[in-house]
Image (cartoon, rainbow, N blue to C red):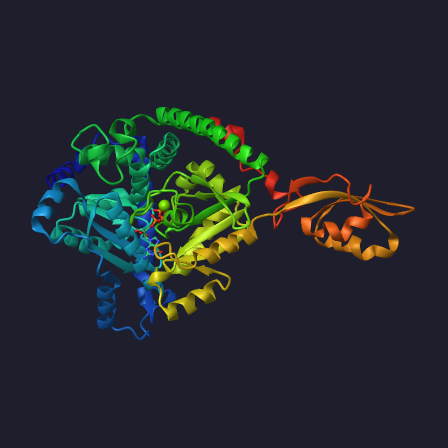
Length: 555
Ligand SMILES: Nc1nc2c(ncn2[C@@H]2O[C@H](COP(=O)(O)OP(=O)(O)OP(=O)(O)O)[C@@H](O)[C@H]2O)c(=O)[nH]1
Ligand SMILES: [Mg+2]
């Protein structure tokens, strides 16, 4: 729009080049030389790269000029059905003032077109959630994004044409852009350019409600901005016409806000240190709560999964918790913990958690680490997957990646395919192959909920009983059995047999009654069992903590 035109015209007048600018320019030049060689000489045959070839060495290839041209034309691919533009013209008029009009861009390697399209559709949903209108989306096939301009040089010109033709004011790249790529693209396309990470951070900043959530998002945003400081300071002040404030500036620029962005690095570092301390402080309260639950031996279930999979709906269905459910990405940012009881009366907690998404900014995973500990410290992971999603396998992969990152990958996991009301029989077969033990449920219709509750009850740790035993030598089978179930705490041999202190399931008390020290009436100490799958070494998982080293919070 008008500001963008102005910005384009003034792009060369932005301050005298300082040392950093010179350094950047050199880096940019070096990078652009390296890639221009590569992109000019890479060719594809039948969707497969034929390795790096020089133009002069492809004489014997079956490419003729026409084929090359056709391939070039094909390589910038439109993704249909992305537009979220409103039909009603009057509403469009109104929204134009308020919302950004975005064109999405992505790069995909040979053979991953379907995946790239899914990813671009998801980016469209993210942009929509952030409050933008998506006008168009284009994908370019390329082994790697261009180091200078993300899309190839020629394609950037086409993109500029598209942006002008549809009247967009923002370009959103599907993967994280290097600061120099973003600047180079902006200079050529003449509108604001942001990336997937900025959109996700923007949604988080709009949705954060609790003090802790807000602090976590701000920390993540500052971390993202820090290496981009110079570029953002310039383009954002141009973008907003010098206007100070956070709400009106649009996707990728809300949150820390204009004035903060223009603070020097040192002050941002100070602010980040303060946020880390705040978050660590709030974490203490959460730890106390959790320790309380731990002392009362209440097993914990965590509902985790891809964003919009229906985690909150499921928690509502199970516990009638009244948790915010929205057809939006990242509706839930704060972990909600509810109490529940199994059919046989065992109390436990169920926690709803923040959703995951592909390319979840690592800054967010770091900042939300204390919230995500809620997941890592639970006893059972209920991994909710949207069964009606076009690529549930990718969702499962993404969620497992994050779960591994927060050290929760060894928890017993139950895959739950939700939205079964939208899944037909053939798709169920496919899903079943993905996860044979999974439960199919519908938070909407209630289908499968009873089975889900039964399965959760089976997976909850049972409280084991600690007993003292003397087992005569001719019953070595019992000693082996106790070792086999991992229940032996202490053992020594004496003349009357093997002396043991062991953990057994309450159902086994009868079996061992005659060997108990002091007879069957001996006092027994109840204690929670160790995890189903103890983590590395002999250390029981329950005693592990995800605490970052103290110094990480303070510098
Ligand atoms: N058809 C159908 N829709 C469902 C079902 N469960 C949830 N939904 C819908 O899916 C959307 C997302 O539901 P949420 O419960 O907010 O999903 P979530 O996983 O908590 O999402 P985030 O908190 O954003 O990560 C909402 O529009 C729900 O109405 C289901 O079983 N069937
Ligand atoms: Mg939710």
